[in-house]
Amino acid sequence: MTEVRTRFAPSPTGYLHVGGIRTALFGWLLARQDDGQFILRLEDTDRQREVKEAKDHIINSLDALGLKYDEGPNKGGPYAPYIQSERLDIYHNWANKLISSGRAYADPYSTEEVQAFREEAAKNKRPFLYRNHRPDNPSPWDGSTPLRFKSEPKAYAWHDAVMGELNSSEEAIDDFILVKSDGFPTYNFAHIVDDCEMKITHILRGQEFLPSVPNYLNLYEALGLTPPILATLPHVLGPDGKKKLSKRDGARDILDYIKLGYLPEALISFIATLGWNDGSEQEIFTRDELIKKFSLDRVGRAGAQFDERRLNWINGNLIRQMDLNELYNVASQYWPTEADGFSDSYKMEVLGLIQERLKFLAEIPELSRFFFVDLPLDPTLISEHKQLSKLSNAELKEILIRVKSSLEQSDYTIDDITNRLNSLLTDTGLKPVVLFSLIRIATTQAPASPSLAGSLSVLGKDKVNARLTDQINNL
RNA sequence: GGCCUCAUCGUCUAGCGGCUAGGACACUGGGUUCUCAUCCCAGCAACCGGAGUUCGAUUCUCCGUGAGGUCACCA
Image (tube, rainbow, N blue to C red; front, side, top):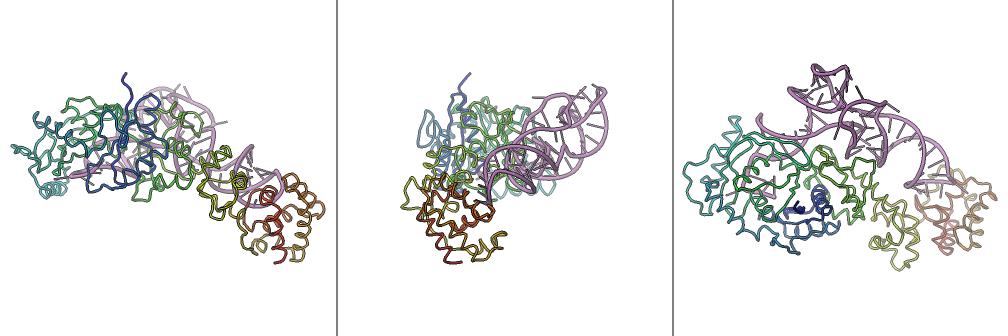
């Protein structure tokens, strides 16, 4: 058995979204689990749509997710170059083979003429097939016109590693363009040549290519090649649950998720389980588990809707499981500017308190700001509180004064603060909802915060005192 | 319109002839001395329709229906 060689072959026309990454991930998993090779190949044969920065952006995206490729641009390998625009002579060699075997010919028609054929077919409600207009005696190809494949229409039945047994009728076969008049090959031609040259064993790609597969099979035959294993991945659907996820409809750049503080491991697990599972009731998989367990025949055949809420759950789950030091390291760029100048140990304590409520790292500022800066007094926190609003300012003030005098004597360990809070509860006879809510509001001025004793302990005596005083003076 | 693919809770899915159709996310209710969150418990919620095969169909077959994809000198 030859080693597994999979490839991810995006065209550098923009960023990568969840759908594209999933194709890359599955190929990567296949290669890793078999100790094979994962290849990145850039399919830049459309010079109009090419975006300059896209190449680096794609490479950065794979890198951010830890999907390292063994061969590809910036890396090299035994079948370099891995950028199609640098392989033009290879495609022309293969094209010449087809010309000599009589399986390719110069397209004699202008774009307008072909368009006219197409419209005529549409008017007659007939499917348009270029081969119905195939010229009898085409002139030799001089490269100034498209080179077309001379197809041999027939029905096909083939096996797809995901979809199972597929078949097509001869209407699916047509004379498609191999080489464009600008000398660049089409995807339809170039990918077949490259996959052969690069010894690719599995082709993974989206469902949108399914209607073209019969044409590819026809071309493989004309070239005398055995097709690799074909695997068609169903689309990842957008939020509406119907159409495939697309940049046009606002699909997010995968790097945006990274910037928001989604962990690569969470993204990997989430994306892998979009259409795949191992049959057990496990919900989250580590990278190693995926490598061990992934298989194409357990990939679902229906499109899967992309649901960010599930991603949030996975990410929050992994954040909670992380060791605090480890979390602190990955969180370093997410602190609010107000945190500048605070010590690592202080920030680490803050992080420890908010860890369990983070869904993604970019939430750190809103959840932690009051630990670093005194927020302005917000009277509505009291006036709109269903219990506190019943008390007069004088009563509130009296309670806070007692709190303050007790806490002034605390050593500010969590245990001591907890004990003092409990004593205050019995001494004042107040219900927890009244006493604790008041203290929390006075010391944070935030609608939500971590546990009271923990927050007070981290804030420290000076800040707590000052904030209590401020609240008392403004009642 | 032709060709192709798909179809289980709102969402991701398990199921590969016999199950009270399972799990998770989300949602709702309750508990954990304040809030938000975590955690625990409970609840809500699905086999697109119709034939056929079979003792028995979510599962197999066919026909519908619905959804999507594709019919480029884009990939």
